[in-house]
Image 1: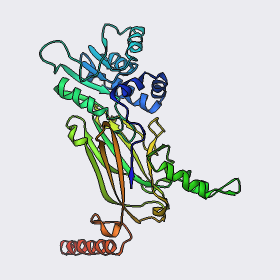
Image 2: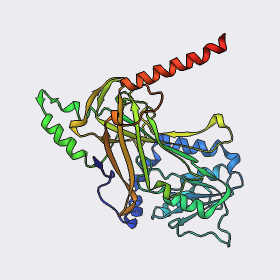
Image 3: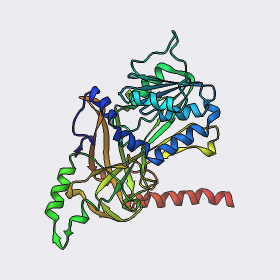
Length: 363
């Protein structure tokens, strides 16, 4: 089964940047409280990391993250925005009295240059580059290009790491809710609706109670080390042992990002999963074809292969390819908590071996 990216069209690079001239896009991001509060806290609570430093804000939009950096004491902030919203960003910078600290440049970061022969003058790179399921829109490529060109060897990335999570889930709004509507059987409509929506992932809020598992990490990135080539294809091919009963109707994806800090106990993390406060990213759900949905009990193994691959026609977008697998034919972790006989026997054998190892030590 193959699912394409959430956007049906393959916009050219000019169309990608011009889409960010729609002020409604920025209103949506600015009013996303978890997004705003995570970046504001990550920057202002670590003012000592910013004090007197040079910062590069990649994809600055309205410039609000640049202003947070200036408020934290940055000596210089280069605010790079490729769309015409850069003009409004300049006015906002002036409005807040940071014209002597923040320089707004309307430019692709790949085309931007600092004064002087040595381009690696930046202490910190700040960017809100995340898309649906983390990688949609491919803006991370631009951030990594900026890192390799401008960041000092001892510099910091805000955020500094990112994780993608995956979990089986129920999708009652597209399955169960159409068994009957106002006492009229609507299963034919529900099946047609699901067939239409299965052509691309669904961006939606998934209630925590619809998860069949709390989520397992599909991929983790250190933004100081990851390369563009590392992002060409990500593959998940593991067995997930369900934790909750329910209807297995889809695969849910979300992400978290974490920021550098002076205090490891006070790490700021932006969460976008079902158990967190909803964000404009919501969650990404790949619907299962009707013939694959089933009722699940706890400790039941679910196996699938999920591949995220760059779209060859547009490097800023990804194709999601989901293949349902038979858990009997996939290697399980050892020990495994699932209810397959082979895993139960292995687990009991391990318990017996551990007990035998302990006995001599107690004699």
